[in-house]
Length: 497
Length: 105
Image (tube, rainbow over all chains, first blue to last red; front, side, top):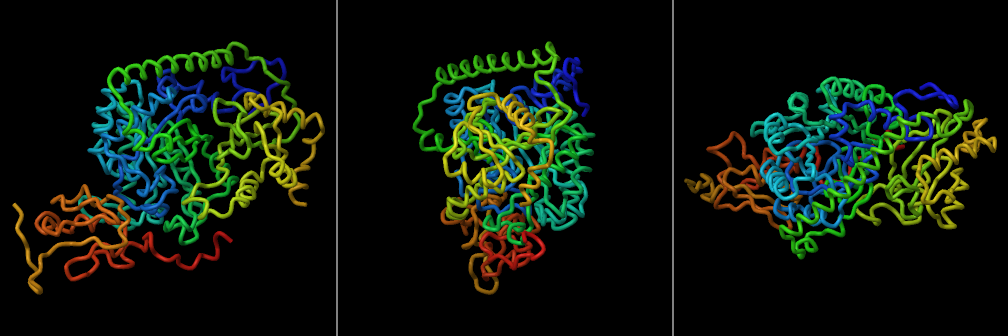
């Protein structure tokens, strides 16, 4: 990336230092048709995810393959599945819950079916929800996630249901790699084991991907990064799926705590460090658009990305609601009005980038990059108390501008606090997760965490509460530069000490 | 039409059974050609009068062919259709094997 100079008109990407990082520049380069498809998708568009909400309904419990990072029983796994101990909904309940949430949260724009098993291992349940919602809430986009095994068989039905976003989890294109990830699949009424299973699964995934693209359906590919197994292989996966027309490739870290009882958890297979994940994401970014803001949200998640309001919409609460046609219609009108306003605002921001291609801040040529962690509950603002943050958005500020590296969980969700260690350890674990950051920006922070963060070399900063994230990150970096903190690798020395 | 099948040895009705250890993952339920599988707690059950062990329909009983947990589907002799080790030991209740010293250290 070249370093822009003050006063130099910026090229068509428009989005250099101080605005929005590489992702928005990529969005500007997309075709108008694709842009329209993703612009209000809270999972696909980095701009939109601050403003729109999505929900998943856990209507598809059965699964037809076994992954070594999944145990069928418990919450906490890698493919957005809550585990069958959570509430599995009937299709009728799923429709009612969706309508109730979409009435209460007008930002609701996407309904997904991701599990807890596989959407296409439960085709009748999945497609009956889609059909019903198309009738009663046609403004809501439909998406599904699948392991891809049954995808070719259902592409026609997916298109007929007007599903326009499909996520396929593709962890490999080499059966020898696959044999280490998938012990077996259920195929043609029998269990197929080992390498043969991986061969069939890979062939089905690739065929399904091609068929979806041929029909103009947006395809995202998810990959779970498993160090020592597919980490070196995923760049090739990225290249191949992009060549076939996948719109996004999302590399997620393996989650494999022993207490989750997965094969990888029990055999000590570790997940990647944040640095390893970022290195791979960077290596793949040259190949295709990456989704840095992925939260590995659960299959029953409700709300804005990064938040889960599922507890507000448990089935007993939903069942108690009266929902009639008039109510549905009014709710849809509220959603449409809000969506129009938000899209107008985003459009204005995009236009401003093109119209005023003069840099918003002086881009100095010196000064090393700094990672900063941000506590935000959405809207692109620093608006969350440090102690309330379940995740932090990690940004990198440098002389080249600000770029978003991705979210990091403050503490992995598990079976509950009792499984995850004492509350006082939570802060220590959060500090470990943010080890490479030098600043944490939040709306407020308590006295005790302040001290512990500071002594760990991470400076808390509450001075930019309610400000837009990227402007604040830029301002803090500029202050550090002015104070002479960025000339030497002081941080490295401090961390080593 | 379903015919009741009796075991040659014992004269008992031949039917598969789901036992403790089942994690209620639902995988078997939509596959059963006789709709013999019932959602129940603490775990799913097979209605013995409906189970045909898939003999006329498929090469292997469908519930056992998709079940992810070893040892939880047994025949009338008490034999597990997926004996220990047959599925690579991926089972919720298994004790953790010795951790690999190379990782996580």
